[in-house]
Every structure is written in C-alpha cells, then in structure tokens.
Length: 250
Image (tube, rainbow, N blue to C red):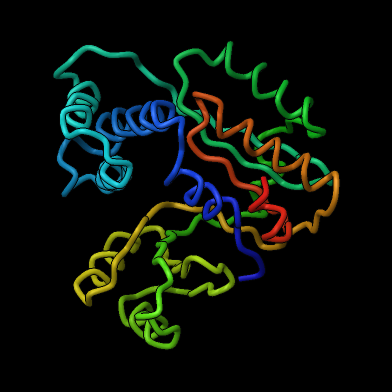
C-alpha cells in the first residue's frame, strides 16, 4: 500500500480514555440500529456489520441492555428513530482528501452543518466522487504492542490467518489489513492462535498521502476532531501525513 490512514489509530487511542463516553455510545447505538435493519437481521453471527458494531460496543464497555435495545429498534421490535446513511467528500487544509460516513435523522440539517465545518477549518465540501477514487476499503485489526509479541511472529500469524498487509509504523499498535470480506474471519483465526485483538473495523486506505506541517497540520487536526465530535458522523478518513508527535499533541 502507498499510504495508511493514521486517524483511525489516533481516534482509537483517544477513545479508550474518552471523557465523552455518552457521545461514543450514541454513535455505536446508531450503528447497531442501522446494522440490524440494513445488514440482515438481529443475529450478529449472520450479520457481519452488526457483529462489528456489537464488538465495538463491548470494547467500549456498553451495557448489554443498551446493545439489545439498539438491535430491537433496528429489527422493529421496539419503536425508534429512523436514520439515513449518507456520505460526504471534500478537501481539508492543504488539499487533503476527506471522506465521511454519517447516520442522520435529518439530512437537511446535517448537510449545512458539515459544509460549515469544512469551511471553518480551511477546507471545502466537494461533490460525491471527488476524492473517493483515492481510497480503498479495507478491514483493519489493531493488536497492541508488547514485549511478549515479536514483530516477525505477528507477521507470520497475520499472513497465515489470511491478512494482506501488516503496518508496523505505529509505536503502540500493529495494524493488520485484510480484504473487507475477510475481516472477521482473520480476526477469529488470530484470536484462535492466541493473539489479543483490541479492535477490528473497516477502514479506508489512501493510495497516496499529503504531507502537512505547522499551522496547516494543526488546522487539519482541528477539522478531524470537529467531525468526530459531530453526533451524525460515524467515520471520517483523510489522506494527510502528519508527524506522530504533532498528532499526539492534538
């Protein structure tokens, strides 16, 4: 791969100690509800999208009752808000390509809000298709680094499990990439081999990256954080390349 999306890993690190747990729960509940409605029913074993959403909920320590209610709303067993899936594409500071996936109950409210955030932080909302060609959907598995895990060993285990690539650039995680359809199968094989998987999720990998420094890099980080804080934004990806030290400072 020519580039990796750093934001997914940074977001995961911040999420572990996220004081806005209520906001995180809201996003996960929406995804569970839509996954149960659109992904093929309320059984995670036969609904890969729901399975991923439930796994994210458990990682976030969401109570089981909350998960069940969200599934029941999706299947129609309980009344609930109907969410629409929409996506946006645009450009951040320095011409960085940005993609967003959202779940909203009011497209007419959400669209101008997203346009405003782009403009506020030095970017602009584009037409659908303007940057999506730069990205490829992949499965991504995060395995925390430790003294007990050897890089060559995890590479061998990942490839044997069916992974496509292993990224070792991050200081805290090994990032294992799979085809979208193989994400959960690779995760299961790794866990069966004794590997502790911290997260398994869909990711968008850029074919190239745009290097940012200084004020423009900080502006890009503010834009990504603003999107993450928006209730309707489920996922945001971008093809920036910013030094890890600047990303860690936020």
